[in-house]
Image 1 (cartoon, rainbow, N blue to C red):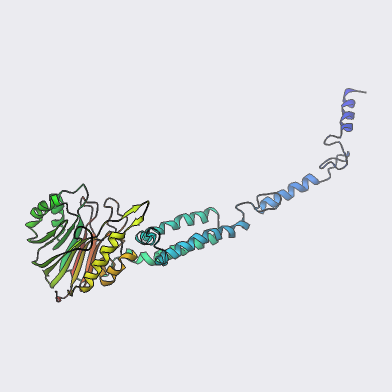
Image 2 (spheres, rainbow, N blue to C red; image 1 turned 30 degrees about the vertical axis):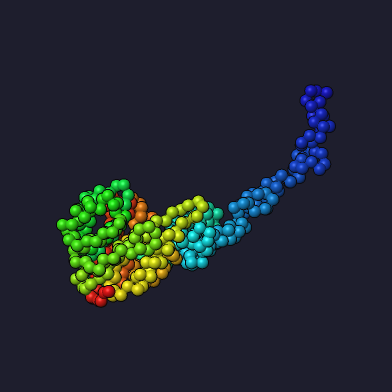
Length: 379
């Protein structure tokens, strides 16, 4: 027997692949014909892959169509929670740590959470997830987009008022005074004036604003005569407001220069606003009992008017920003404002314009407001 014959015999005896053994998948029957198993398996595999399951067993892959409803549900849950927070922030408990007040203060920024929800839905190719993510987007738009459009023209201003917290380590009284005068404001409220700098501010502003009243870290400067000056103790070791009546072009107007106690984020207290809330409640009581028909409150309230703890004060007065402002009107921190804590609040007057001015060197930005209205009584 030749060497080739011996090799062929050994292969047949050993039952290797292609030997024609019965039951050997994909084997030849010895005549060179295949049993067709390999061909059928390949065809099935191709068909399954064309259907997009990603497996040869027919089980859906992790990102397959059968899983998309599940991802839609996963996206819908945080989307609906976000919608509820935007539409009904008052339902968020304020304990522990006044988290409700903190959320209300930062409420416009919660709209940014829509972007990762939309991205998640896009990655998972989930139409239901996209639809769910659009619900908080529409809610945010209804709440905040109207404020981004120009306010209607309410006529010419009778006078202008400005508020500025001059705290921080970048302020120079002379430089700030020059910039304040350049705004054309008729009445100016300055808050958090360092006691060592008060005389410098009085000298720098005195030539333009001949009438002024100061107490502790607060000051009112006016082109018009002042009377009835009173320091208001709203709790704490020092006055948080001064009140004075100014003879503006339309009649006597009561002005408040205010700086409420600061707030902090603390590990043991959360959003520490207890002192501010107590002073805000006392201020709201003063304003509600003030007999002046025309009243302007200027100052740093250390909080957003959306904060439920400032609601008693906001109920008695109208926000100039809501009446005549454009955009969010953020004022702090000055280099990149994230929240509006400096306010102009009114009673008996109309805001014609209100503008957050560029950084003047403080850690707050100033707010300039044009005001008009008929005269009224004061007390």
